[in-house]
Length: 161
Image 1: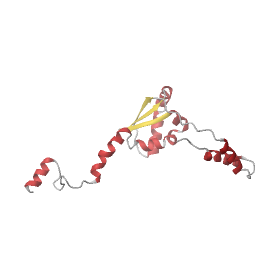
Image 2: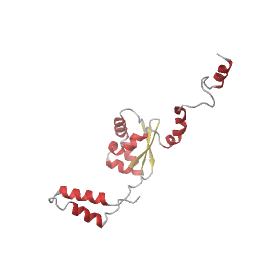
Image 3: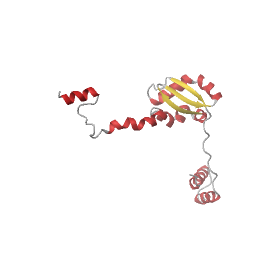
Image 4: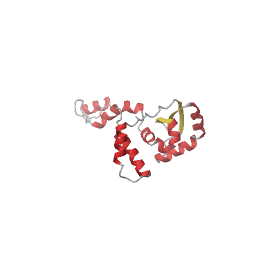
């Protein structure tokens, strides 16, 4: 080894890397994603995305998964629900791990917090109601016509941004 290469090894930097040379993109990624991963770990994403499918609509309405870190899943829920979830914790962990296909959750932590209510849908405009009625007027009476009319009302209703 040359004297310069030995000095580089002592400083901790690899000998083939130049101080002012181009850096690999992979060296920049950890610094860029660290703030995002502090807020929500990447392992939490599939649990949050499929929460209703994992626990069912009744529990999904009163709980929200917050963070999965070191095998502990933090779940926000109202006070009375936390007691019920403690009794169901074994089954809940089995459902979550079964959905993920691996043992990712080994412990549950319940955070007393009221989940945010779902946003209210705006009522259909009278014009949307009439337009939907006209669109299905030629169809025979029945559940299909009613469903298509309801779909038309929802599609034609403007949503506030």
